[in-house]
Length: 365
Image (cartoon, rainbow, N blue to C red; front, side, top):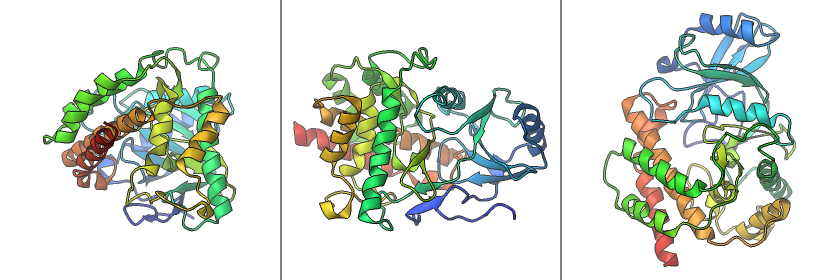
């Protein structure tokens, strides 16, 4: 049949829910030696054989992602580092591979990891191959095409998947050295300040204010779990028809850290409206999406947690980190090596997110 080569689910006019088989032809700047990949996959992925057909997924803007179909119509996903000069410690596909392989033995929904290639000479960058998970990806957090009951169930499934991740004993799955215990929030402030400085293109007063405020208002930070780092609805693959998470994807920012960082980042849509991802602020109960208190309450019950102190700090840090990430995306976009052509259009977002974060600080202070 050939891949479905269209742009459904790409750009600002996204369908509310798109399918994982919505792909496009490989972009010129991301082309690689397909024959070399075929030799590698035939030798390293059991049961895989050519000829191969390759398409590119366009939903993400960080690590370029491709779908490979073999001679038996089995589909695989390939994630690789982008071409060009990269920021330090960014695009860690080897860490992605490691965590999803470790989590395969748990009740956390992940794709099966097949092979990691650290040899840049094969296709030009490090990459890994994992299972293709056939399902749905939510692009509009308001779920406009779902019933109230389906909305409730999908949000419940998202919160449950996050709680499952945070309940994993990282030592038991061999991830003791996946990160450091304690001090995660301070490291996040330091890391994203450095990443922002490395990709800075103009002075943003709100970012400067946050860089000064965050280290001085750090809460106690001794709790450690596996954290995803980018836990949001768009990074979940849902069952084709059921409100069930089949796989958590895009683990580039995964590490050991404070689970409240994932929870806060996942809860940002309750505080900020994103025109590209839908609006869930001030919905009435009949709509079906739980409000922030109910959503967080369910998470706390699943993880045995009581009241969360300093909640606003975690939200502010999430906004700051997102602003720094988008600044890096924009920086790569103007250099021409981002995985999405939209990246170069993101120049206004670091200012938008950081100003929202600083407004949140001023509202509390």
